[in-house]
Image 1 (cartoon, rainbow, N blue to C red):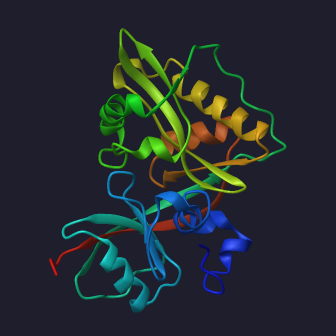
Image 2: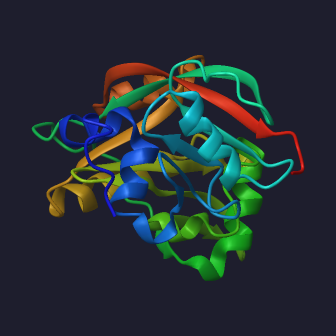
Length: 239
């Protein structure tokens, strides 16, 4: 159920607080919720959100976390709350692909849909690029495509946060031995086409210091919307 009257940005710009808006709408079936806080299950994604940056909301988030569990929150600096430790922050750029832009031209490489039956291979591959963020049930968050070679997944990409009209492209990675062959742009272009066919707007997050990825996305036609802060928060008590 939507929480009304708390987070006005839900109706203004869902991408500004993507975790909150995804879990309150399209991903509601995955949401673990307590009052003004919500999160994905630990085996789906290490992301949580609060409707307001208050101690009360973070105490409710504390109640959702398992002892020792770490999650990430898009927010201003979290308030101090007993049992929670804010362990650091990193900046991310939010980028979007304009609806009026032409789709990128890419190599005609063969890609295949991925399903949760491929979850183990997906976790293995993403662990090389961004360990810990792709989990055993992240595959439930959206559609994924991949490239296989000799029975091994060597490239992939798909969707993560879905908060209409936005669909986030995420999990894009290529095994180091196969980079530079055009797999990532090919997979991303397929996702862009899927989103355009559905009347949705493609978006993504990228760490602000990852200049190589940022330049790739710019060449493909993405533009920067804003910089956000992602806070790493852990539950450090057991009660």
